[in-house]
Image 1 (tube, rainbow, N blue to C red):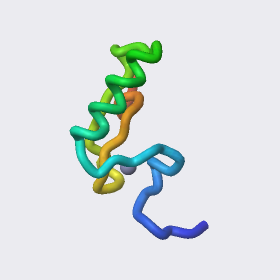
Image 2: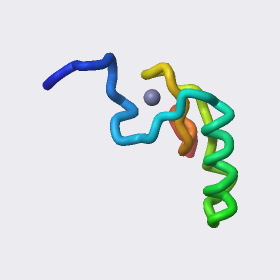
Image 3: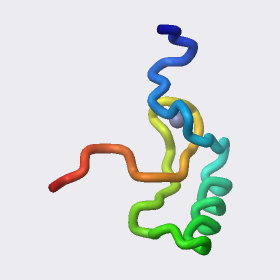
Image 4: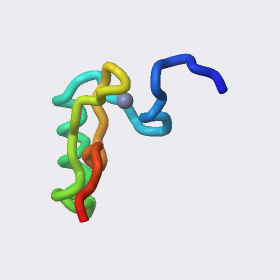
Length: 61
Ligand SMILES: [Zn+2]
């Protein structure tokens, strides 16, 4: 396994360098039919960027 970056948990996700950018993408996805409740723009703890998607962390239930 190569470890180019620490973690690589967000491999395959689109990364944004600004939260504002991620927020705008999220809004567009919602307009396209995505569910607002599980789409979030969040700061990634694995890289220095931001992602749009499910909020990381365990889900309850
Ligand atoms: Zn990331």
